Image 1: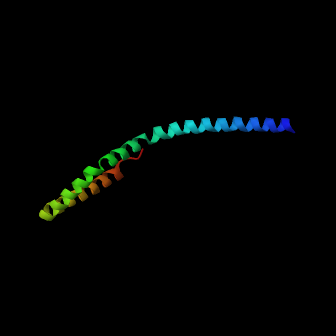
Image 2: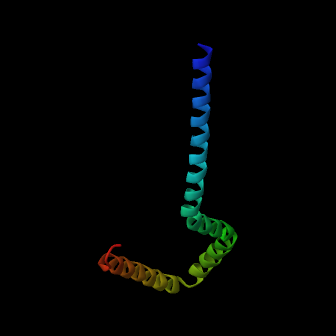
Length: 93
């Protein structure tokens, strides 16, 4: 009974070690795959202060020059719509 138990324990320990190795390899692959997104997110977090200041300046500017902001909003919407149309017509990879 004890030999069977020891053999089962050794087999389970080998299985656990293999699972740990598999997880380690999967972690490396996952980090390599998501590195670009992580970098972009960290850049966004570092720009948070500047975005806050910029939004305050834009709020003051929009109160003083409402037509200017409306014109840029229409241009931005037009550029976004154009980009979506071009992206839909480009072949998918």
